[in-house]
Every structure is written in structure tokens, then in C-alpha cells.
Amino acid sequence: MKRSFVPLVLSICLFALQPIDPALAQEGADAEQASADKFRSKDDKTGTNPINFQQDIRLYHEYQDLGGGNTGNVTTFEYRTPFAKGKWQFRIKIPHRSVDVSGPGFFFDEAGLGDINFRVLTVPYLNPETRQAFAYGLEVWLPTASEDILGDDDVVLGPQLFYAFFNPFGIESSGLFPGIQHAFNVGSNVGDDVNETRFDIFFLKQWPEQQLYMLLNPQYIVDWENDLQGGVFDAEVGYTWKTGVTLYGRPGVGLGPDEPLDWNFEGGIKYIF
Image (cartoon, rainbow, N blue to C red; front, side):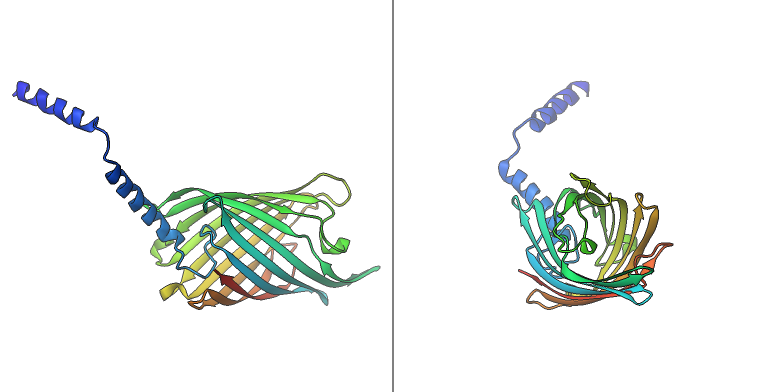
């Protein structure tokens, strides 16, 4: 029995050491890629999946009730595109801001260009079996505001890390995306220092054919420089047509002891190529 067992073991070892058939290896790689692509489907034209890198343009307007009769408005043009063979994404936002605020001894009624910002993002880890992914990137704000009150006076950097979990709690066509970002200014000492930690989590639910979706998005900021903390809880509902056009509405309310606003409403349009 022992003599017959040894040749069998040697045969199995020799077989294992044989070169892998390239066709089989390619089939395995293709299967793995197809499985991963399920969570980055190009059929999803809602623009709500942060790790699904597609080319799109967006235009949206946000009205802000800042309390005490003070108001703000932000109209933003946004463009996103993948690069480096789809492994990275570039995003740029160009905002036009206006504020109408007053208080004891001051009054501001200004409108103009805000701080332009851009971001690069990549997904180094995606596991189709566990439906989990990690992404990291860097966001940069440039001091382009036409008036001091409309932006910062310095370059601001914001390294970012977030986690993606698809179909959490057994909910089909959904995703949970918590993230953290720390923003700080660099370069000059012209304006106030920026030193903020930003927590962001959103839950996405899509309905059949990925046309109707709902997004819940609490955001919270700890401002270490000014000893303030607060945030906004937004809820977005949108509808996507087969052409890649999405219309959405996004109401929100302020959170925390130092809430940045009483309430807000954003409405916009997206077009994914």
C-alpha cells in the first residue's frame, strides 16, 4: 500500500508544478473581473456609487437657511472622469456663492466665485465575495474666492479614506459608505487656519433597473481650530433615465451644538456619458 501511495503523491506534486494553461488563467481573471464589475456596473447611471468611476457632468444649486434671517446660495458645476486606465478618478467643482448675513456690528451681502476644488480618488481594494471595498484620495481647495467671506485665503488639503459595503444587512441593491477626511491649510499665513476632521456616511438604496434611488447622508465636522462641531443630515431622492440624465432633490437639516445652518435644499441634474 505504501509503495503505491508514494508514486501517487509524486504524480500529484509534479502535476501541480506544471505551467498553468494561459487560457485557463485568463478565464479565471476574467471571471474575477466580471464579479468585481458587478459592483461598478456601467449600467448604473445614477452617479451615486463613489467607487464606480464614470465620466459625468453635474449642475446643482443649494439654498441655505443660516438662521436669524441669514441666507446663503451655492451654484456648482462639477465634472468627473476616470483616468490611468480607469484606476483613478479626477473630480473638479467650480462654485458660485452668495451670502446675506448680518449681526452686531457687521453686514455682508456678497456674491462671486468660491473656492475651486479638485480631487483624485482610487480603489486599491475590492473583494466581490465579501462585497467590500476601500478607497482613498486627496481633495484640494484653491483660494480662488472673489471675496474673503466666500472662501478660504489659503490652499487647503483634505486626505480622504472611505469604506464601501454593498447590500448590507441583506438589503438588495443598496450600499453603505462611511468615510473620514481631515482638512488643513498649507502655504501662507494669510487667513484663518483650517484644521477640521470630517465624518461622512451615506446609505444608498436603489430600486429595479437602477432608475429610482434614495440616499441618506449625515455629515459631521469637528473644527479643532475654532473648537466647534456640527453638521448636516441630507436625504436625496433621484430618478435616472436610460439616457444617463438624473434629476434629484436633496433637503437637509443642521446637526450638533454648532450647526452650520438651520436647513437647506439642493436640487440638480447629472449626466453620465
